[in-house]
Length: 238
Image (cartoon, rainbow, N blue to C red; front, top):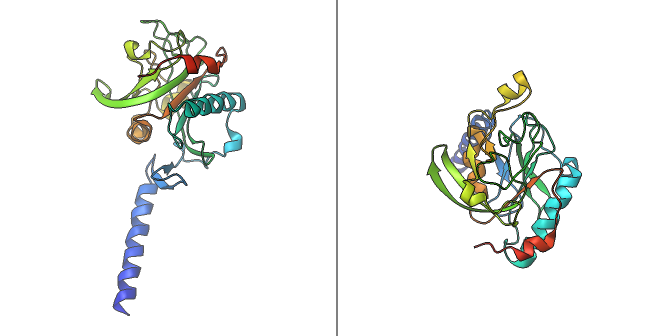
């Protein structure tokens, strides 16, 4: 065999073996989307990728309207990622979506916890109050990461006055939690709850935080939330 052909063939065999090994774990990095350096994840349930058209319509419409407003303000860069947590769905469903709006791609869907005082299976209540231990709705800009009691966590800056602007002082962050797992969802119909943070599975938290850190967007949808884009314009985010 020609030496060049042999080396090329060996390389492709090695890469194929490596890809297979990664694909046997969850979550895994499968490929790159159209956005530079943006990974396309396998859905956490090993299922088929979620199509853009399958996303929750009302929650997505609000998320995109606010996201576009923030880009027009210059508070989000073009091509920023958008995480959508749909709290109208029960906690045993994969209701957190990582989106690439520029290319209309769903990069990830996974479980996410809500605050323990928001409800059990459903988040019936949301709050901006300190010590409420409830989730907050609305738009957040992501900040940096730090090491806390839950490991690596992502700071979230709530940018809607009276809705979620106490997030930083409340310690509302994106972090990993063992109580967010499919086993609990399957056996009792709901996952564990946080003190108000959008907690995710430790299996996905590292990849998710890495993609969302430093000025991307999280929108937490709740049926009681009313979008007012003027509120996004009037709130200062440092």
